[in-house]
Image (cartoon, rainbow, N blue to C red):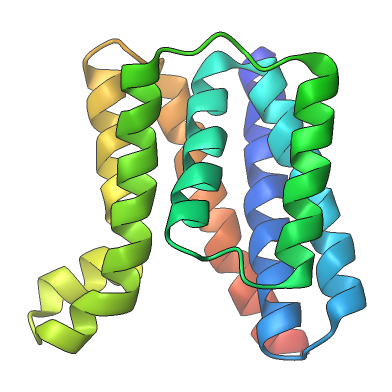
Length: 175
């Protein structure tokens, strides 16, 4: 039952994250982008507090995006503040710095690669690899295969990614 709840939190987080970004980037709707960003923060921090493996992923994504300067709108700043306030109120899980750094660098590589790789190569594999941000997926799979993470957390992350992509499709369809 616990991984069902975790999977739902990952799904909600992915959906709300992408929907918030599209509302801001495409429609320039700060209000609804912020609302969906806050919903993303609630789902992400709930997963972070619920499961330590999820904490590595969501905190890693947060810090990786912060370093990559991807927190670039008011909706992101409000989402970040909500996430951090709730996390501080309930307590940051005890994390291994090494594992957290691995997740941060994976998220950072995904963001930098997503923005730059198509500008420096026409290699179809590399372009698709970074367009769909596969570094974090591979890293989480390797951590699960190494028994650092539970394999269910990898499946939850895949659901996050499917939900993220699905939100983009829903947004395009109804926009």
